Length: 167
Image (tube, rainbow, N blue to C red; front, side, top):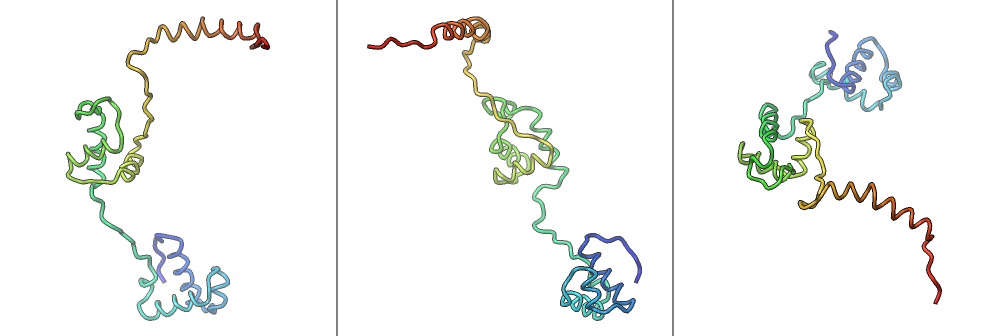
């Protein structure tokens, strides 16, 4: 039997089993050596005798064809780099729902939100939780409070020890 590249370990095990069979090994010895049942070895031998070693090769399982080829998926990133507001969204935050909208507009393909998350992970795009802050937030006042007022409150708390007067 001619050696060739092996696509997976199960296929390799089947081909090795036939190789041992051709060398005169018994089915019991083959099953013990490869850690499989005698039934499996018997099935491999029958297939080999009927259709040759090609019958022992793995059959690729394709599943449903992808809706977007990988090249088109990478185009999604180009659309996202423009920012969410460039696509008419309020706030520059990308969500799976928004990405789904862009994909549908550009390619005419719809995906479930959970699948969009998988696609984005495949493309190396990580999700971020938006930081929700008030628009009227005053950063200078916050820093002042953290640096001066809060330490003063903490000091007075230590002195008073939260004393309450009894009735």
